[in-house]
Length: 195
Image (cartoon, rainbow, N blue to C red; front, side, top):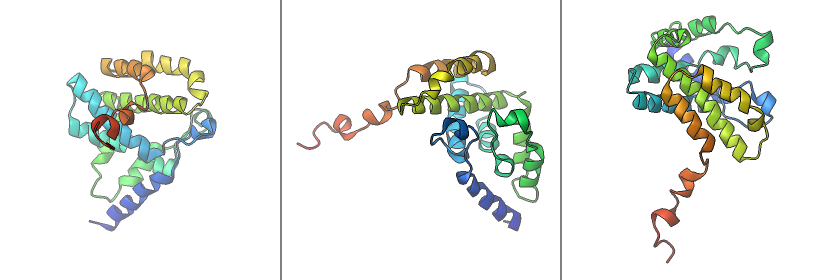
């Protein structure tokens, strides 16, 4: 391991402090870059499984690095992007330079081109993770998800690449954010508990 490798590891750790740009507009606690990335990885794997397409190792690498350049140029919101252009290519080049993980830069480049099925699956997962978080915000009583309905329907119809992602988007809209823990609690799993 080189000194640049350790610097890279420490820099990745700073992503836990980096909030996503749209937090400014929501005014609510939303997932940071690391939390967002983790769900993108799993959403991408689910889409790949359902589509029965793509190299899963490639998908994981791509999903892990899809927002990594933001460690140096931050996550710009949809309003900020009107006025500011982040140099994510330079950020990524400098981030990986001198590390033993330089090949991950190729994964990021492929993701940005959106030509391969793996890149399309990861972008679908990136978009869907927003809808998952909007569903959670709706559960918490936020009025913003309702205001975003038209935009998110546009994303569903025009920006998602795979049939699976579109189907999953539809399922997210009617899903119950709490069902995972309501169905996994001890009163359901161990009916004799507390007797």
